[in-house]
Length: 170
Image (cartoon, rainbow, N blue to C red; front, side, top):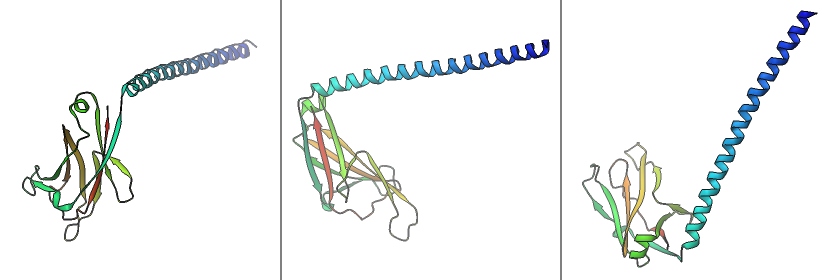
């Protein structure tokens, strides 16, 4: 009888201990979720505050023709890329100082792809290596420069008209 009582007592204490550990885990997890919730609320509040202070959002589309791309660097070197510099009156000193310039590559399906944008493709024969193409941009007062660089540091003659979207937030 003592053995049965002792066994039940040990089993009960083990269950209590296990339940207590599990409860501690859940309490810790619940506490962490509440901390993350508060952190998210704080960041959301800051973002809403920033967005509330912006006065304007302006958007413009620019199409760059193949002949407007300039090559820079020697083909095969790491400094090899193509660029097109375009006047853009949306980009003012106020935008540079206190605003945001966003640029997008508009693909064949009319989807806006935020820059930097990376895509891969197989160039024409004889090459069988995948090429990774990166689109990026630099913005300064009154102009924006679009840059395309390939992972093999080459110029692949496949550029047609390329459309970009520019958005400024101030």
